Amino acid sequence: MSFIDKIKNFEILELIDKANNLSLKKGYDEISLERAIFLSWWCDKGDCSFCYMSTQKNKIKDPKKAKRKVDAILAEAEICKRLGWNIEFLSGGYDSFETPEIKSIANDIYKITKTPVWLNIGITDDLKEYNEEIIGVTGAVEIAEPKLHDKICPSKSLNDIGNMLDKASDLGFKKAITIILGLGETPDDIEYLIQYIKDYKVDRVIFYSLNPHKGTEFENSSQPASLYYAGVVATIRLTFPDIEIIAGTWTDNLANIGPLILSGANGITKFPLFKMFGTKYGKRAEKEVHWTGRTLKGTFTDIDKLGNEKSEFNSDLDPFIKRYIKESLKNKY
Image (cartoon, rainbow, N blue to C red; front, side, top):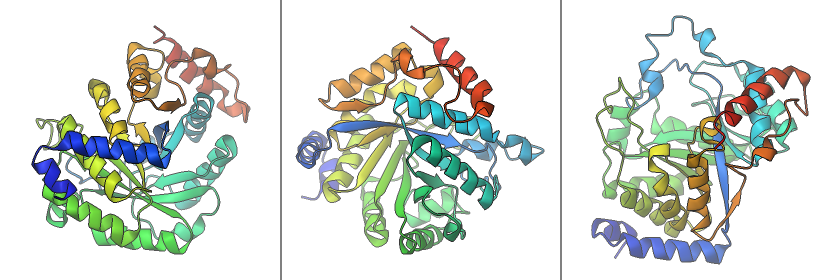
């Protein structure tokens, strides 16, 4: 019986157990905290039917005003460094920043964190412009079943994403994809995801569960069931033992963390860092990791790790460092 058949036959606990044993055998005993750093709240495409940015296109009169200040972006990266968080990727909607700007930001973050960053900036032909400041490129696949993908993400062709990943490979960069569960896929559609990973030799898969945004066609939809989510993650872990898996969940579903880790996730993501830090929610996230028997890389609760209000790299960042620390400390439990 295939892994997918086991999901369909509700044998998910068996899948989780096998994935957990494989993860332990492979030495995946440290769980990272991941945070996507957004460059802008604008996307020129703006037609992915689940996405918050699709609700903003007609509201934002001047896209330039949706761009974040670069110093704020770099200060956020420095706070992540202090807290031991990984930067999941730099994320920007289409036509929010020009390639030289993104390269400059990535280079400055590399200097701060000493770690090259992932990009998730849409389908781009400019990968040759990047060097050691990035480790890899993320393709926003979202859903790998072609007909459903074309309906939900009409401006992001699966073939175009795949071509970008191939070019990334030719340039020596790693390749990642994002997948959102709860968009109408079925367990059988996991076959499309598995084939896509094989076809493009994907190094990293980032899973999210649907977050129904007001104003989108999914606003009244529910998030996927936790065991279904865990079963999909376990299937990918068992099919691809060496792949890196990051799994996202929301503050209203923190109980997903434990099962997702046991299903093979190497890291967890999609948290409002400054709102959760030092709160009961941060403590809960850490407890979820603790009870999987894994070690957490980074912290949700250690106030001392925030450090002082001065940047270690550039005094221009000081006002933003101060603001982020203040925002985190006001939530102190």
